[in-house]
Image 1 (cartoon, one colour):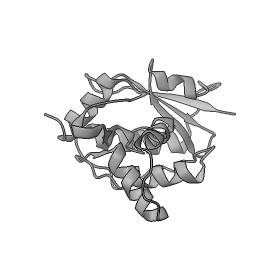
Image 2: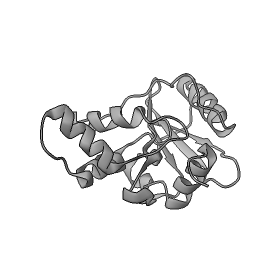
Image 3: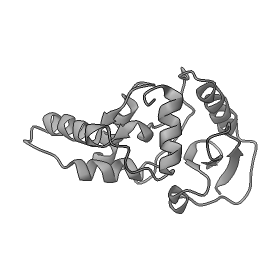
Length: 167
């Protein structure tokens, strides 16, 4: 069974929905965004411990600080390539950004190949089922272009401003 919880965000952001299997966070997305299509809205809300942890994480984040813990999560359908991209996103510090091309170059070096497609990285970044905690919003286009965000470009811009990486 999948459970859903609504998190009310501060002004300037759409509210967030969270999914849990009762033990792990399995989805986190902005309400009414394109990302909603990737998630089962859930059968009911339940007071899962993971929702308490996720709310605490989000409260700290939206207060302007980087949380020093991560709620337990599980990612289904994680291919080796997606896992590598998730690992790279998790390395992006609060208040910083990287590009799809920089992640592609890092993965190409790690795999000992000359080149990797930034577009393929973009697909894996966009696939991310747990936004914010896995900070896909910190991945931007070449030359600082704010591109592609399933949670809505307005939320991506607001998140980057909130973190101080966009003025």
